[in-house]
Each structure stands twice: as C-alpha cells, then as structure tokens.
Length: 248
Image (cartoon, rainbow, N blue to C red; front, side, top):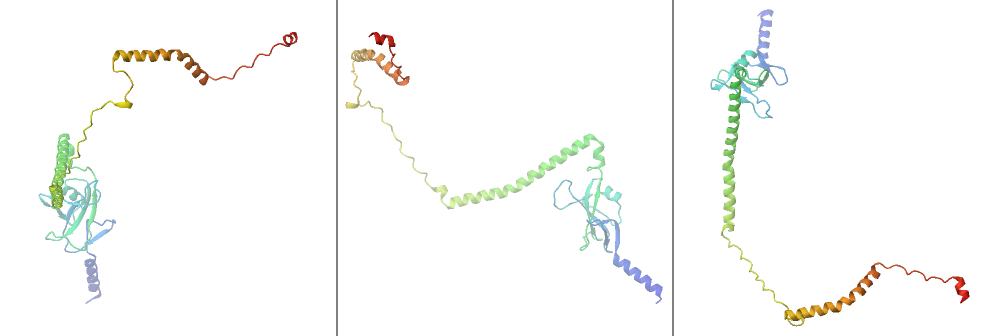
C-alpha cells in the first residue's frame, strides 16, 4: 500500500471519528455538535415563553411529533413550527425516531412574532385566538382542581373515620347548666326600713316639718362653706391717730 493511500484512509478515519455537523446543531454553550452516522433528524421541542423552569413541550406536526432533517435550515424549522417564535430544543433521532443517547441536545431561538403569521394578519382571528387560549387555560385549571378533589375527599373521609373511632360522634352532649331564677325584690323590713309614714298625708307633713327646720340653717351653712373655700387673712386692726391718743 502506498503512502497516498495510507494518508487517504487516515483522513477518512478522522472524518468518521469527527462525525457530521448540522446547520442547527449548536449546544447550550454555543459550540457545534458532532453527530454520529445514526443521526438522521431532530425531534423538535419548544420552551414556553415566560415559564420558569420545566421541560419543553413536544411540537406536533400533523398530529405526530415534529421531526425535521438533520441538515434542515432555520427557515425550514420556522416553517415546521408555523412561525411561532421562541426557544427550541432539538434532540437527535435515528431512522426509527428514537432519541440517540450520549448526544447533547441542540438549542436555537427563533425571533419574530410569538404567534403564527396567519393570526397576526386578521384582528378578528387574533381575538378568537386569545379567547381560545383563555378557555384552554381555564379548562386546565379546572382539570387540576378536579384532580385534587379526590385527595381532599379522601383526607376528609380519614378525618371523619378517625373521629368516629375515637367516639366523638357518639358522645352525649354535656348537661345544660341549671337555670338560676332571681327572686323578686322585697323591700327591707324592720330596722332597715325607712322611717317614713305610710299615710301620704302624714308623709307630706313629715317632709314639710323637716324643710321648715332646715330652712333657717341654710344661711349659716352657706356662710360656713364660703369661709371654708374662700378663706382670706383677717385685715389688721386700725391704729388710732397719735393726737387722739394724747387727748385721751
């Protein structure tokens, strides 16, 4: 075997080891990906715009997962996803559509409108699409809520069973406290009774005599109170003039 043939075989071996390169084959770090000979296409998956984390969704075409050729271009990918913008993950597959292990996924971002171009052309279509997405969101929320109702009902049944096992549902209610009856008011008798005559005329005469005895004392009582609350020092006695004293 000549040296030229050896060099050609070595070049072919290096190319085979290097693998094939795809136009869309770029890893998450922006480097090119080398694909084995078994790789024939990409299974397309799309990340939801605005979603935090989570696995990307499989993109479907004609009811089946969308698979594009390994040598597809960006325009072909955009056509396959109906022009929907976003970040896409491309997983290499073989002839049977199975994912190839040990092959890193490729990532690509398609710019432009987040909705298909056919939806942005007609305002009515955009409104209908928004209503459809809103209804789909509400349906998903109700489906999740309905799925959780089974768990809630099961937990409630366990609580009821535990209460029944403890005899809570079969306990007698506590006895009501005795009713306290208040006795009617009775006027004091004997020494505590007011010394007021029972006869109205005699009672009037009693209070009239009391007022007549108290009335003369009112000025003295008021004067005493005035001195008590308005107490002022007594004025000094006036000193007689000196002449008057000598004449005396």
